[in-house]
Image 1: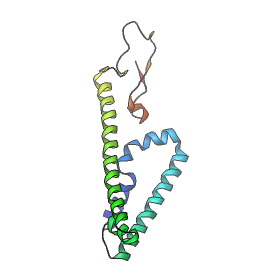
Image 2: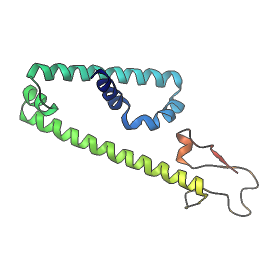
Image 3: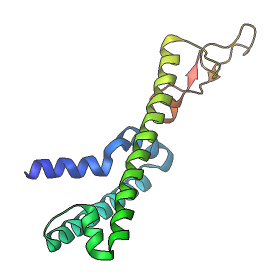
Image 4: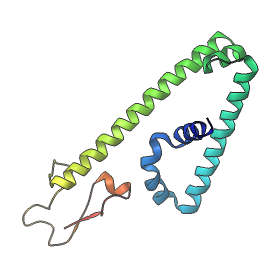
Length: 148
């Protein structure tokens, strides 16, 4: 259906990076981040259209089948290997991101130091001034950036 296609395009365009987009906009600025996001999204949709055209031209099949018809067996192996490596990379990156932010969030919520600069300053230190937070949530725009 058209809705399923639109949702699939949205998922593949944004995917697991949805959680880091606010931090990217904060770092790059509203105008430049918007332009880059639109340009990359347009390029992805163009590439998807080319893949659909190739798929229809060869009568169906997988990405590997398209590559096999275009550049031979080595191309099919290269495409299939690239798909496997990219999926593994996405999974590893997402796991690291969630673990880093989950740890930072738990340290913030529970007030645990954990040796990572989280929690209140040591007795007699700090001079009553707020300490800068080392929380990864701050980079994503989710933390206050200052601890009392």
